[in-house]
Length: 401
Ligand code: ADP
Ligand code: MG
Image (tube, rainbow, N blue to C red; front, side):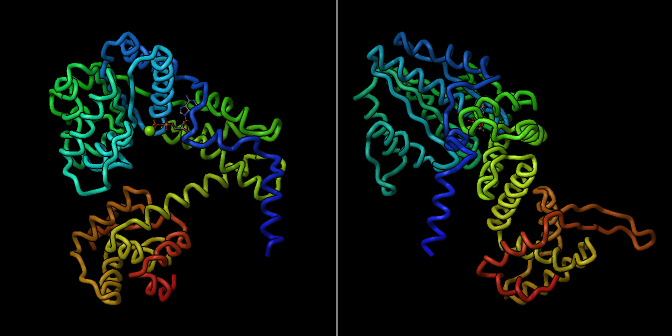
């Protein structure tokens, strides 16, 4: 057994593919960010007053996922902080990701903890956590920057109260210059905010447009230079990663994932080169993981409907009538109460929107209209994932497809 392990370790250590794969990870902040010069300079200008002891502008940043919002913000804020330290300013900042810290309590607890104020995981009121954060600010800083990333998550769930409180810190504490950066993937978010918050937060607005294939190519080239050994990337590999990601609204994260995973597949195989074939396989792997995650986290009835679709699609497609019949049977088998035909039809539409199936209404002449449903994902992937559900795993095994 230990031979196997040693073999894996040896191969890993001898990697001919990567010099440093960490440079391709999403969290890594590179020194150069091609095609974001304008956004970097606008953000830096908005924050520059902090270095003179004045308040920076509040900034609202928006753009689709993978357009560089997080990395650009971290890049600029890091530089700002180090400059402020050189100038011996009592400046601090806090970065909170509102998707990970997705309650007002967690957001304020993160803010407090980032300035060294300890907060229990639960037990205090949200208002008390906020007060402790404010007290910590007063004792330690003359200027402070709050970065709320993916702020749409908290606003959609809890409204704009968190933002309101943070926007008002400056008014409560005239002795401290507080500015905020709000980042969102949802471009419509600002319209849903209360007008006071909107005007306050949107003093400066910076848009991050999607990258095109050419720009993604430049980004990948720069990051690949130091991550891969020289000559390892076959011709066309970077171009293919860029082209595939450009099709998905110019997502740089997707482009980097494709490149990194293609490299990992090549390495696992003991290949000395990364080829376009590896990129296609990386794409499959990413897609498979995405589907698994999606299916695994679905509610029970969505899983049952999905299973019913696969169970009745031996001819490549099925109809809503057949799906419903099967669904009723499956509900009996797992002893849960069935939902209405109408609700099942809604679930089918939701699965369609997720890209797992395709459904369309077709006319059957004098028999009227019917909805045809076609599964889009390989059945092994879906069934394998459903098997892991403790409530329905058993019936998945009994179904033959
Ligand atoms: P967003 O926050 O808009 O979803 P990120 O800032 O997380 O996007 O960027 C996604 C990935 O792409 C990250 O790994 C980031 O480092 C990388 N990236 C984005 N833009 C650039 C760029 N201009 N140059 C280099 N890497 C970039
Ligand atoms: Mg981000």
